[in-house]
Amino acid sequence: MKSSVFWSLVRKDLYVLRGFMIATVSVGVLSVFLLSLGRIGFAVGGILFLTANVASGIFIAMYSLLTERKDRSRAFALSLPISGAGHDQSKLVSGYLAFGMPWLLLTGIAVFVVLAGPSGTRGMVVYALMIQVFVLALFSVVQASLFVITTEALSGIVILFTNICFSLFMVTVNQPQITAPLRTAQIVWTPFAQRMLTGELAVIVLTLAFVAILTSRKRDYL
Amino acid sequence: MSTVISTDAFTMQNVSKSFRYFRLEGLNLSLSQGQIMGLVGPNGAGKSTTIRLLMGLLQPETGSIQVQGHRMPDQGHVAKREVAFVSDEMSLFTTATLEWHMRFIASIYPDWDEVYARQLLKRFNLQPKQGIKGMSRGEHVKSMLLLALARRPRLLVLDEPTSGLDPVARHELLSELMQIVRDDTRSILFSSHNTLDVERISDQIAFIDRGRLVDARDKESFLERWRRLSIDVPAGVTLPRLAHVVDLSLGERLATLTTDHYEPALHSLLEKSGARVHEVQRMTLEEIFVASVMRSRTEGES
Image 1: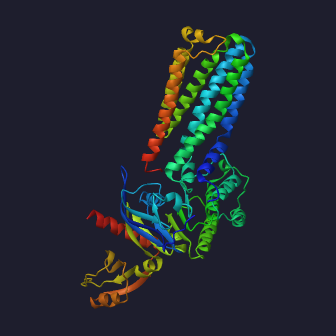
Image 2: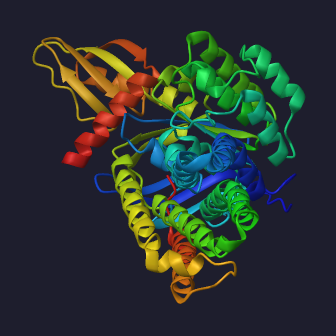
Image 3: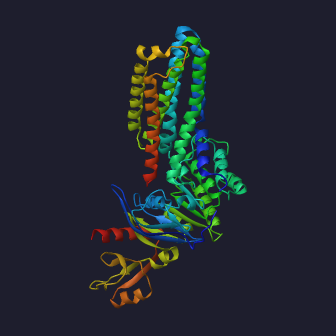
């Protein structure tokens, strides 16, 4: 073999998904710029930043897994010298990379913006991290479910579920008793923030384990 | 990379696989190196399932499958280094160009033949910079075939490769396939509805229907053994009971008898009874296929 088929497939996915990655970063950077344009700009920028993050996860997972099945390019990928499980694992890795690289960049920008802002609100870094890790956990759930789901109708239900979860999450973390302890000059890891981040990381680990078990037990690939 | 020397391009022994509404049952099939096998069957016969099992994309419930000496599906990732698979139910990546796909496949397969790929581009009249999304069905199929052929596989597996191709492109493809097996270590399995294509290039032919192998043998045996006889049957004459009669239809004076074991001795047997063989017709592969399938279904129902 000239090059690892696994990594060739990962590179292929990053190439195919490059449009989503570029769009996510572009919208994310634009939204950060809008944050500095007064109250309305801040509100629009904030919504745009969150939308860019959440929508990117859904689009990447949908396009990488569901569209490949629908347009039958999955059969072409499976004709290459890789096992079915190897192919699924390459989808998992490429999905995390395609979502994770823009996510990491935008998370870095968000942290920088908070730290570079008024010194009295530096503690809001924890708030930003809770949101960003929640978005990553949502992506993990969507991606893991699309390893099982093969129809657009069911994938629509998953997307609806993630939207509801995200809305509930935002309502929860925006309660004054949650945000007030974070609006400090010092970075404080409140018990709520600790529990939330632990829960988010646990979801990511569980979805990874779910996909690992699923791919090891699967026997039919087309 | 270890190479397993095998005298058979593939073997399938007693392979079964069930789905909700379909069962492929006890399939035994093999192909020697350097041969072309045509897999013929009606819609829903099990051709694509057979090919997917062969490619390791499905796991058989019973039986064993070996491709180029590798056990499937466990060693599928190794076997597929030497096998190219093209199906009409397959698509290239729609957001990329043909040229990108050529680079992609060249980066994976050490035997990729760039000169041959460029020749095929011209022969198939394909534009490398063209996006897959904008291609016609025929261009898409030809692109997949280019990517399969230029990697110089030892076994080429094609599921309905000529569907969507115009007659000229079909002719070009079949010519290419015959060129490939000039090197007698390369083999081809292809499924098709089109018995003319199969008859033109196959060495071996397998008929499949309703998940069962109806018949499999070399093309010449099929064509030499099957005959349709027109027989004059004068009034009062009863035809003798004959073995290997696949179909017999009786008119007022004329009977038509189809046999899968034709031999000249049949004439004397018929003439002894007072009948006279009026005409002996060779049968086309399509006629043989239809007669085989009908017989198999009748036997299955009875």
